[in-house]
Image (cartoon, rainbow, N blue to C red; front, side, top):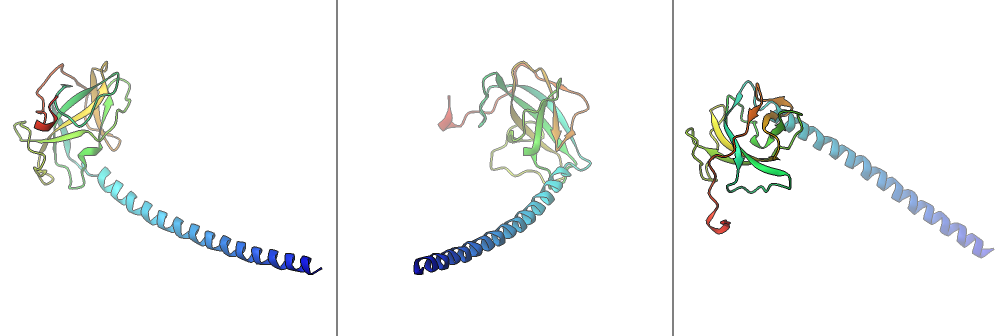
Length: 186
């Protein structure tokens, strides 16, 4: 009989411990949800600012070509690198060049954002990586390099779901190239 009482007492202890652990876990879950909600609110605010970053500004393509020079990007099988020389004007300080997305002109398939970005002078010469962007809303000329299908002949650019070009732009077979860094020459 003493064994049964001991067993019942021990089970009661385990139930109290289990109940405590469940309450602790539930409290932690509620706290995590609150933190995630606050983080989501902050991220959504940043997203909204960036999405509105072009404002009433515009993007103009100066040239686009199949690219073979230096880039930190590599083309995957079936793809090539494409350089897009573009000027953005009238944007806000929240505009993010990394969010410019290259889109197949024919079927509207996205091939992503986060291009290799090089700042250019107004005349189209590459600036050093340490050079600062011209403050908004002043014109900023950039070279954007993307991975893009070899067989696709034209593209458009999107920024947060907004088509930046009035019509598709063709890709020339060649153009100028960024030099390879001295320690990275192929």
